[in-house]
Length: 250
Image 1: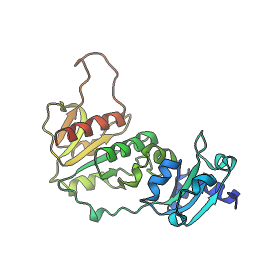
Image 2: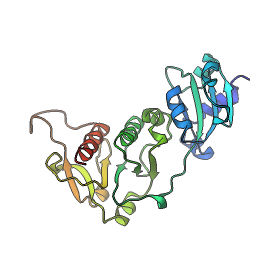
Image 3: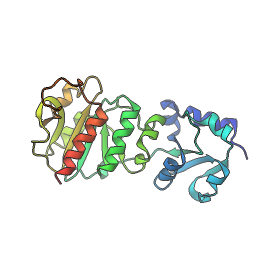
Image 4: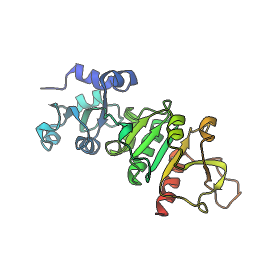
């Protein structure tokens, strides 16, 4: 049974948030990414080259269809067509079950770029951060570009879209860290094992309302200090530096 025009249309439609939300699904492309997701997310549909599908147990998805390279190219969102495409159900992550105390959490305030968003989720997975909390205007985790950038980390990291002010206020017993120009040198600051790390918008930084809730301001110094260098760091790079320094102290 070939990959039908309707299925190709469905896969292509999942590039738009309204269709992802309406159907509660998202698309993932590439053998490694899809196989990572199969172990952690319910799969509605798989389309792939015959030899690739032979490696996958039949019960892994509700429906599996063999496809030609040409069909996969028509369905794909990528420049280089994949060998395997999957449609997955969006996981439901319950806030009530989260243990906030004793854990390190990432908070994303208005991150706009899907690539940055996916990279931050990927590095969260690397540094053992299980929960990422996002403002409603942060890039959609189920955007195909974001999903690809996570490199499978979306299967292990729980992403929540919440009112950040409410989240931080309700958990005000935990320290809240944010990177700001007037902050303390991160390499000299005392860093605990738990709390919230806030990363702000690529252009505007952390919003004023959230800045008011930050209890510990941090600064990533350039080198040599006070020399003329780039104006700022990419937000995903900054997040990696901050998370690495927190974990180094453990």
